[in-house]
Image 1: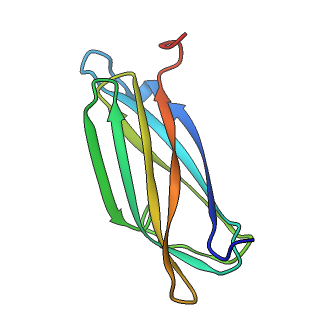
Image 2 (image 1 turned 135 degrees about the horizontal axis):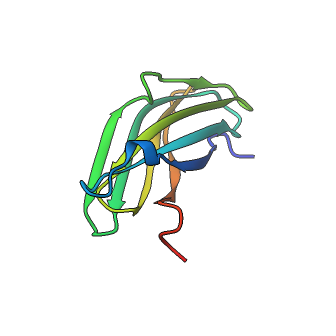
Length: 124
């Protein structure tokens, strides 16, 4: 086992009631599950996201914590939150990383694997 390891999983939901294809504006909710599978407690200090739509437009989102929190996860602990993104196209992706601070003073990045934001039925 490695002392510094954070596993991240995602779930995405399209929000048709908050979307308008005539604008265009496509809203998505995403739920992130962050699990400390390492050997040392770690605090999530910052987030870095790259949001890309189907036209190749990129938006970088940086900030402290997530949804107003900087959770500390002991080994084996899980933190889950839901947030949202709005795209100008019905398809896009998100990816990034969390900047973590371990209780022993080590700082490291926890990668967030790329995941899709897709309006149901748009892709075959």
